Length: 326
Image (tube, rainbow, N blue to C red; front, side, top):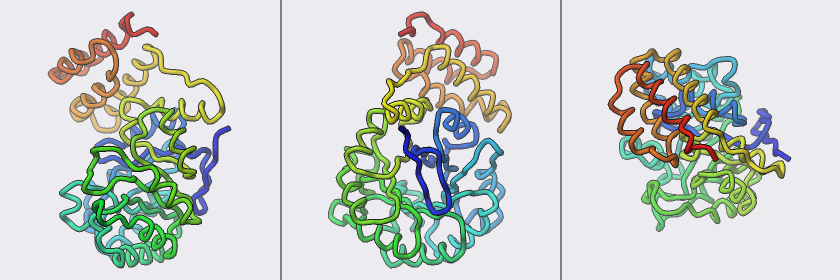
């Protein structure tokens, strides 16, 4: 039986969330994840500096539709006042506000945001307190286990977030120093869950429905936030829900793979125009092709094609090959 999840005043149909991913989780990606069972999807990270300066690109990242709800907006920055203002400015777009305190990317960390904040727990406290005062929306924080293996402070940061009014906490149990290398330490999730009363969400190394179930069972976390495992694989939500209900997961057929990739392209064209859609869809098509015979040749081909007609023909020829039948 699927598990519902409540974050503040927001009641979700299940406990499977699509994580915010820069350059990835735009409207087309979110709509496809929702079709397969994601109960909450996040925008890409949104810079509060961009919002405050009325940067159109920052507001465009939050563009949505009635079918794209409930929507989480993830903000990043290092100034408590600007983050509070960002929460106010994004309130008309979001059903939930999340503050990123886990991104390990050099550009974000160099600005003092993302996982750099883990080095200053009192600034974390100031941010959570100020943002909580600025919004009545459900409010969450996403962190890593710490800056490095010598400075694991996820329990401290988690308690601070809870004490200052966060409605839930997401932990990616790697340090900033690890980036995305090695394995995430799920035992940190289990420890955090025992420590906090608010919901704890897990992230990290969720590439299959089996991984999702293992994290839920091993850590006791209240839900999961799926990131890289959803790339070219929106079915991970459907398959995870099937396992929760005691059913056998149904892998996508070649026809479904093609139909979904084709719909992704159509949504992208409608949202961004043909030129941008074709450029951006190349990486998605490479992910959709992962694990199928002839994928390397297909990747090489689509990365050279310039017209929509050619890409559609290449997709149909590749995904509908008879040797992709199970």
